[in-house]
Amino acid sequence: MGVQAQCHLFAMLSTLGLAAALCCRVSADTAAAGGGDGLPELLQITWHCGPDLPQGFQDSDGGVLHGALVTVGGFCSGQTGVAGKEERYPRGFLSRVWAVDLGEADARWRRLPDFPGAPRQELMGCVVGDALYCWGGFSYSAPFCYSDGYRLTKTDGQWVWSGLPSLPWPVSSAGVCAIGSRIYLTGGADYDLERFYTQADREGAVARMGARLLTIDTADLQSGWQELPPCPGTPRWVHATAAVDGKIYVIGGATGMDNSAATYCTVVDNWCYDTAKTAWDRLPDLPVSSGNFPAGAIAYADRYILLVGGYQYGQVMGVEGALRPAYGAGSKHYPDKPYYSDIFVFDTQTRSFGRASSLPLNNNLPMTVVSGDRIHLVGGETSGCRVEGESFGHHPDLYLVGSIQRAES
Image (cartoon, rainbow, N blue to C red; front, side, top):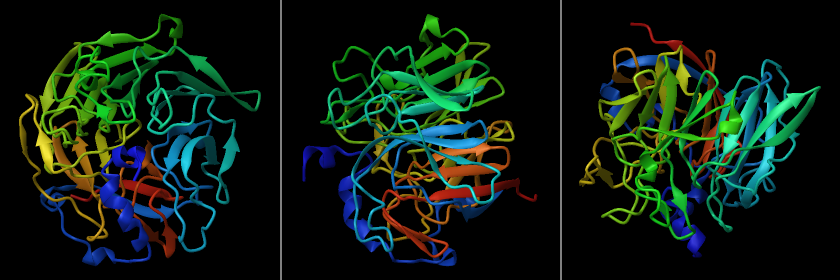
């Protein structure tokens, strides 16, 4: 197995062999019980499949723009043998951009102008006003991790990309959110084809890179990125970041491999940054040591932050770098496969965790966008599944839509 596969994100060594078990089907009522069972149900979600993606992939990003759900970039590890989908899973990094019009019953995915940067996965995307802003990401080609940024707009019926000020350092899988005209970027990892770094960048020049907080004002782009007080917590990537009521919430994630364990560790300490006070305070730790949560537009009703899917590494790294064993067990729709089906919920008013209806599959880091009372999941990492009788691969061509409502008390 090549270096790329060895270093590939989220323990691919343990999961690629399981992808062949595609057609194994487990009903929801036999799914393994998980650590979320003792949490109050805050939200109920009814799931259904939207139109299939034109190809399977993971780690894209995007948002809702001009009435369409837009997805940018991603990666597919390549796969054959998925029933009826022999051409749907070509291997490679993507610069393709796809959109589906929301509110149209028979809408299908259509191709928009390609992302102008190098093909990549785990770029960070955020919609502000009538534009989608994207930065960073990683690939297996030099320079491996990226700092460049681009904006997608629609003018006179034409979709157009334009350049943005670059990030102050290359970064992948940072958390992203927006408050007003400002975009905020939290943490993230550097990558050099050998490993991912969160304690510092690959050169050691950006200390605690995975705890840094950056901001840029889309109304004053020429001023570029500014640095704000860093998060006091564990440096991390692949973590949930969301904005609610003028505050930025940073939840979960994982470390890079540049630590005393020399491997990925789950991060469970959580934090809130008050943009008015320019100060951080600590939130309760996660009820289960699960991480790898999507970021961005993941808040419902300007109160509830949805933590979708995820994965548990063998150890937890604390704020001071101390290691301890993983704790709790997430729920799995397919008990014999990796990744979780949980949707944990953080209530920003009570500062406590609850849960929402589980996913109808195990999924790691699907692109997630909450818009009104809908949650949209694009792609991800599943180790194979069947949803509504259809087979999907490890990096699925699956577009899943959920209708959200508050649970009855």
